Length: 362
Ligand code: FES
Ligand SMILES: [Fe+2]
Image (cartoon, rainbow, N blue to C red):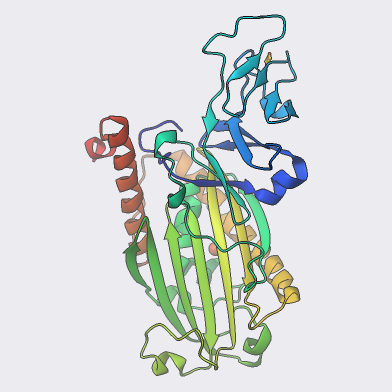
């Protein structure tokens, strides 16, 4: 995945911070690059190419020594910047005895890695996140691996019209999701999608929402490049859509029956392998930790439904990759998002001094 069409100048979620705390070292793959993440003595993360410069063994099978990492094949020692510090039995350390180092930051329970040009790695570009231990939410973490391109997962998430067809079992979604066309607008490095679903069954039927067979459901999500999804849902008694004339409801409205929030990240590991990180849960205002745990299970059921259709879709696409999709009215946000990613890739390539390959292709 070294193509000039790939967005590398961006922060990607690579792991939960808790995984690093538990294991001390993580081996992963991002955009085809093998990456090892370990913690320095002060706890700060280091991300290095997981491929020793000597005989290309994985450094993730090595040993952390203070702030350094030793390859446990023939013992080369690397600094947190990726430079070889020791070559056992050899005094001279050649300049090229180094592995690539990646910018990495910890933010609110996730480790974010920048696989592109380190000079452009601006921490201010990490998208806003609500941490797992945020006091206003009962969030639970989940993770799923897909044998599919991250693009297929992203288009699945951005077009929630699929809930009607894919998630009738898990979420109890009815026709409203497919029949309502949301409002779409561009935001900085992303897209915002909002809509009311009127008189639908509660999703999920928990808390006060469980007392209502039908209710008015407000949804809004921001999807940031690359693959960062923030989705807020609030349920009110039938008639609330009219009360707000179809506009955004006041979150402090006392008639609120239930509200929940999910944050999801799509990590492209290779061309056709992706890792999906997700959280979901109710606010502390309407729900409790037990309901958060129930929602986590529903989420796993729902994402297994997504996984089945997306992996099958990938297999069909592979039979003839030249076939292009035909967008419908539900793809407005997808099209907008793809345009935003293309623009970021053009900026990335221009910064590299590379030819704008996408424009040439178009
Ligand atoms: S492969 Fe790492 S020291 Fe030989
Ligand atoms: Fe889905």
